[in-house]
Image (cartoon, rainbow, N blue to C red; front, side):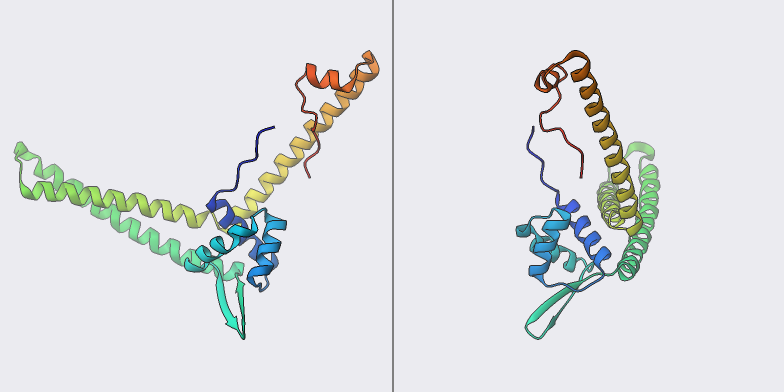
Length: 205
C-alpha cells in the first residue's frame, strides 16, 4: 500500500471553512487544533497556519475576550463576503477584458506598415501586463468559488456517492471470495494472491 498523500493548503482551507459552517459556533485555537484534526483530518500543527490565512483573507472572524482569543465563521457572512469579493473580481476582470481588447485593437493598428516604434513596444508591454493580471484574477476568483457552501455541499454529495459505490464493490468482492472458498475449497490468502486483492481490503467508513 502506498503512503497516503497529505492534504494541500487549499484542501485544508476548504475543510476548515466546512468545519466552521457545520458547527456555527465560537472556538479557541486549542479547540480547533483538536477538533479539526479529529473531524477534518487537518494536522494540529498546521491548523494555526491555515487559520491565520483564512483570517487574513477575511473569511474567518476573530476577537479577544479577556485573555482568550476566539474564532468563528458563519455561512451567511461568508456568502456575503464571497459575493462582494467575486463581484469586485468580476468587475475588475471585465475592466481588464475591455482594456485588453482596446490594447489589441491598438496593436493591430500599430502593425500597419509594420513600423517599429516606442509606442508599439509600450502597448505590447501593457498588453502582456494586462494578460498576466487577468490570469491572476481568474485564479483568485476560482479560489473563492471553491469555498462556496453550494460547492462544498456538492462535493460532500459526490463523496457520499463514491463511498457507497466503493463499499458496493467491496461487498461484491467479499461475496465472490466466499463463493470461491466454498466451491473450490481455496484458502483466502491464495484467492487474494491470485486476484491481487489487498490483504487489508475493507469497507470505507
